[in-house]
Image (tube, rainbow, N blue to C red):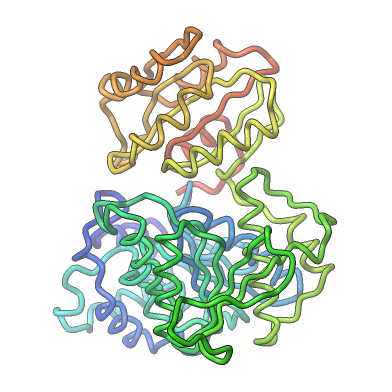
Length: 454
């Protein structure tokens, strides 16, 4: 099978990333049956599963770098990809080769062909890709597979795996049409990856989200660790119970960074990366009990060498480009906060494009007041928000609140949008490209950044 034929086969299934996903498309029994047909490759793997609204990919990359630096062979499954499908399946941060992916897809085709139609009906691109990733990791004998949840957690394919550690990153509003309109509903779905006998780690969450995580940990009779920078010593706290018992379901709050006294350098920039870093270090510390022996040096070296394109990616150009896939209100706020810290005095030109399902009511108030000029654009992704005139109208209420004039330009072509932004900018200004990973990917390609391309 040729590589393009392999891609065509993968995309021949229901692709919930290229259209708006619906809950019925998520089917754990189908994933379980598919993995069984593949020989249950996940049973041969030590795995970590990562859920959350934002920071999943960054946390996965940081943890992978720490574990790999310590001398272990790592598998990494993430989504979506920026430029090539092969980004989703990596070993030791090397993309699966075209040849290996084609071989795995050819094997998958044989397996699927022999499956009962009740299993293959509704099979998604994500599910078949996930099974292939586990199959590949098992055959390559990775020491640790780090698996990013695609959407939610409770019904996601990754939840067919029983990991040795569950990680939940920051929870905020996103994918409400699938997960629910409240933080409690969203957190309930993500808390589904907390399993009996498997330790879990998270960061401080909004109270209604944390309540769901605490409940899931209590029901699973498992420990939930909270990586909290504000906490200076290990203490135990409990879900409200009639008679709290120190031997029952401890929830442990600790500060993974406290030991380092700021003596660490993280190559990934952005204020929000600090909590991802704290979470990844905490996860690495918990994994020591499972035989993954890291020390201060490997943690520091892992942090210093990690990279993750499209997340607070800063280009040393004139003007400076900042590429970030912020796609909800919380991540947009974090992005602007990071720009305040890193570039407090520079003008900002915003190049913004997003997808149809994103929560503009929370994104726009975070972005528009904090920029000096705006270029609205779109990617060529099928889910891209294409009506730029309507988007411009939605921005007007926040423009009218500003004390100075903020020019706004509409460009359907991303390359033209970048050219327009460059015309607006002085050499020491910031051009910030954000709104979706698909827009960031198109910007990276237009700017000629090195990447593998399908």
